[in-house]
Image (tube, rainbow, N blue to C red):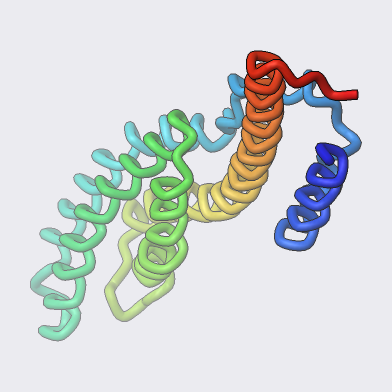
Length: 199
């Protein structure tokens, strides 16, 4: 009966989660609940980005003040809105990146990746490539560095997110099998206490 139940659970699991087939080949003792899947490269990038961001923001504001009178009125407004938006996004993005990577929290890491890809990357590229904003040499230099940070974090964040989701799925499956084993042990103890012995 137990083997039939286990085979049924395995079949359903493999149907719902196709990645779980590879777990059958891995012995349970190799999957530990304390395995760390945080990514060092992403964490180093976030660390250096935290220290670079204030310098980048200060440089951009100084350059904006220097060229403000020469900008078209539309670009004055657009540039100010972009810098305010990027300052808020950068704080939220870096916080989510730290929390998601170090604490292995998938929602925070997914939020970091989405903000980086959908908002921060286009805004950074606009500041770097839009010549109508009268880009100054110092501004271009810091925007190139910031673009490299954002591009690397976008690519690495996606890789880490996939690895972390796979790890969470593995932990879930191992926990399900542990719960099933504990349930079987409890049932066997109950049967023995009542006085029935399986033949």
